[in-house]
Length: 296
Image 1 (spheres, one colour):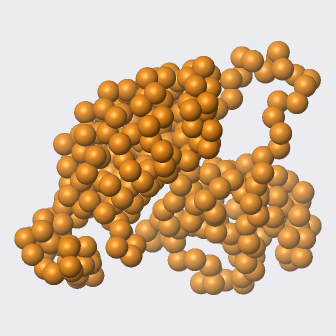
Image 2 (image 1 turned 90 degrees about the vertical axis):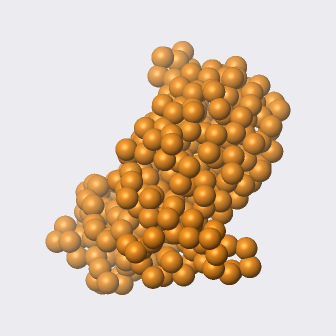
């Protein structure tokens, strides 16, 4: 039992049981962590809570496998996007009473079982991008009083359904995406006001070792990169796990790039010779990342 788990995770599992005392429950938790890892998922302890992620290597996750996640209970962040789960697996989520961030995008889920999601007492962020949900799911989610951000782009959700939800829950930010078929009828009038973006802090560095070791998990957001330096720069995402650098773009002087990312992700900027210049760490909202003119 738990022989393949690092000693740190075994110790943390004991701390997650009531009173911090080792017990049969601790054994069950360590076995659940081992099962999640065998399925390709990652488990990280943050304080007294868990972050569980399957979207990179755990895409064979099925409905019955979610039972392993439910055993942990204190899961605050869960990403099962692009996996094989369906509406039937959502029943396992009802045990996750501390869950605040949930990624279900690009899965086979639909309206059935959404009441288990709507019943999560602390849920703040829900991504349903490219799923089979419809307005019926929005009706159920209206009862989720803690929900703040909802993504329903490329689903069966209608504008009317979104309007009804906004009327009942004015504080929810709902992202439905852009309907290209309507663009001709609205131009040349203003389509929408520019987004309000939070500024990201530029941290100058001279080596890779001065930048974050790896990216951390977070919630989906958008970054607007702006190159205000006088030379081209290259943009690298610092990956999860071992922190490999993944090249994304080359920005000419004055260039702007919109980039999808996750909060707590780290982005490294280099010159054309791959010499590090600085980095940004993403915040949990749409943001602006300005590469300063003083960058060499």
